[in-house]
Length: 228
Image (tube, rainbow, N blue to C red; front, side, top):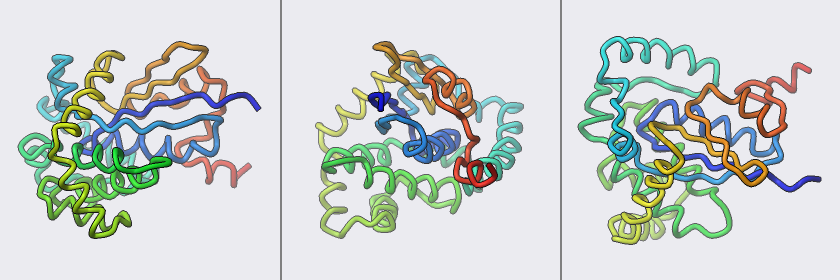
C-alpha cells in the first residue's frame, strides 16, 4: 500500500462551511488513503490578514448564504441551523476564546486528534445547530463535557487556553494558513509529491479527489457505498 497522503484542514468553529468541510474530511479519513491533520485556527485573523470581507457583511451574499446552508445541511447530513442573531454570534462575539480552547485541547491530547475532533464538533453544534454561546468558560466547559472530557481535564484546558503558549500557537497556525494563501475557511492543504495543493471551501472535494488520485463518493460516502 502506498504511503498515506498528508492532508491539513484549517478551520474555525464560527464558520458553518468549515463544519461541512470538517465532517466530510473526517468521514473520508477511512475511505481515502490519507493522514488527516486538524489545524484549528482563527478565521478573524485570516480575514484581516488577507484583507477579505466576511460574506455576512454583504447583504446579497448573506441572503444567499442563509438559503445555501439550508440546502447544504440536508445534502451533507450536518444539522446546520443558523443562530437567531448570526451577526452577533459571528462578528460581535466571535470565536477567539473558542479556538484557543480547541488549540489547548489539541496541545494536551496525546496520540491523535480524537478529543479535538469531538470538542470542535460540539462547539459547532452549539453555535450552528442549538443557537448557544461558545465564548463563556461555562459554554466551553459544557461543550467539552459533552465531548467526553472529565472535569479535571476541562479545568486544565480552560487554564491552558489563556496561556501565552496557546495564544502564540493559534497565531502561528493562523499565519501558516495565510502563508498557504488563505482568505477564508475551510482551507484544505493536500501534500502531493512533495508540494502543497490548496483548496478553499466545502465544494472542492471532487477536484481534490482527482488531484490526490482518490474517488469521490459524495459528502456521505457510507450512503454512496451502500447504493453500489
